[in-house]
Length: 310
Image (cartoon, rainbow, N blue to C red; front, side):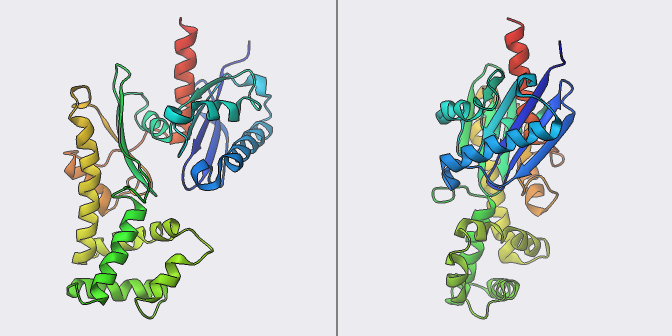
């Protein structure tokens, strides 16, 4: 009998990652490609990209589909809470004999970060959300509503708040620090006046949310450099993210749960990730043990072992 073999699939707003791992979860092969969020590119295109990536992974690793013991999948915009059937139907034609473990992008990030299913994850990247999983199986999520309804503390939110501050300054409703931030931002974007932001933001070659998210590194840099308006925005983002975790911690089963960070804004040491760590009473920024794609493979292994033991 061949050794167990697992696949993890992680589809976020910025890209699709798939990885093949052995029973020790050491990656044997992996690849990355374009985004696979069905709410952004449509279900048909997302399904095609996921299947294509799986076939490429198997070919690259020199494996047959029948050799894959189990596969775990978490796709932004397609949580197993509401899209379980779609996830299973997406994978089944490529992996007809494998155990399929549908999940969410938040759960696989939590499992990867902590190497267990129990804890609280705070994610801040293009979007933001907090996710908790208790030993008894109960799960709780706050945030994750998308940039039109929420996602406070995310890259998109930071970019939006930055432009709002610049607009206030241009209309005479900001202070000296807003004026300084306005000048620096316009210089960064190569624009001559604030009204040019309209054409910059809404031009057709890129979604406005992606353009806003791209401003996050700039505002974090300005906050770290001492600009008071930028620092105020970053501190507000941190308060929002900390608040999402504290809402989950109100429930007794989550009160002492370990905390993990995920997403591009929190996976790096910067003024925002440090502010969130301090707000949560953590001695330092938590570092993930594994990437979310390995968390998906780990989740598949957990479920396979649990079923094999019954």
